Image 1 (tube, rainbow, N blue to C red):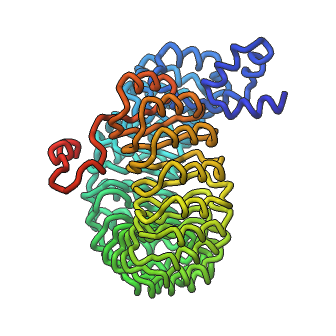
Image 2: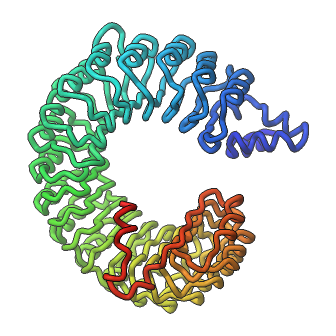
Image 3: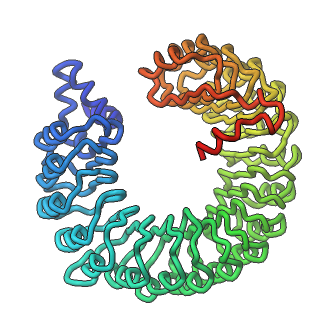
Length: 555
């Protein structure tokens, strides 16, 4: 019985309801207390209504500890009010619930005094809602107000008055672009033990706002400035780093004002840094990377689109971190060459993920070295123009789980055959825009890599219904398939529907030989099916032939 309960704990609410209909014994097992401690209604969010939620809460309210109602747009104020009866509730996700009101929040606050985690992202949160939070949710540790743009300073004043939310350690204000400098000062005063702070998608965030926050906020461990380009610079980031010396995660994206000055301060003040994201920070150079070499605990580094980074900077980095790096992203770092791969293979002995997307100076010699890194599990070589000789060497590492070889037009069936020979545990493979591969090459891959759950082969015009047949016969665990722009017909679609029992997402855009009737018949079994009747890219001979107006309309 204990084993059965453990198995049923992995099937979700829908699976439990189906199992309860099998027989009386199974129904008894599905009513075990621990199975209803965590209820996630996101997979069926489009069909959850007030009556269903009220029945669920009425039956299991003493057991409910975690409740996820994200995207349950059909649930109204009537249904949400019942949540207040769950006195043992600790984790509540109401993201994108349109029925949320101040009255509902007050009812939840009075009934669920022990609530620790609350997600209100994309909800209608007003100043009154913030006052209710500070009045009734004194034990709250986690709060997400991302993309809630209806509250302002009048509501945030309650954070510093009375009990407030003094125990908050995680706060997400992403997309709240209505906040001003004074608001950030109030947040710093009211949340004195804040550890996680997310300020993503705030294009109007300035140095003045950040300095107002830093004045009172000295306990941060994780901070994020991802998303749209912000106006913050070294002026505010330097005091932030100096005031929070125990920082472990620092994420900054699409910023052209931050330079090596911030990196040097980061290396000097934050010695415990584990994760660093600097994607799109165009002023980062080799000198900045050299200073990061002193961070002995750094294990995740993202330098995507840092065009000034070269082999010399990466050399100082990997030699200084003493082999602690586990994830490295060098996407679109156009100055990176095989020399960097040589330094990585010599020093980064624990590397599990690396990306060299669109690094045009990477050759087969470098790919051969990558195949000799025994710990490497995930590799992205999109747009690197490697050939069959290069990818054949990847078979030396039998631990690969994810490979992306898209837009390598020199790859042929022969290279796929040699590469897949020893990759028995490969789970994800991306061959999009590899126009020279044929059905025979896919047959070899399917025969050797039977654990594939994601296969992407968009714009490979030589792949036909035969590829669909191979996949349906050999890849029994296939979950996501992209054959957009391939020579697929209704026959191939029927084969996929019948043979790929676990297929949940299928992309067949620009497949002009597939009819709408065939697509309609497959939608009942494949939950996410993307299809249109546009002409595939390979049919356009010149740039002038491309249909510009439809592209502009989509943008």
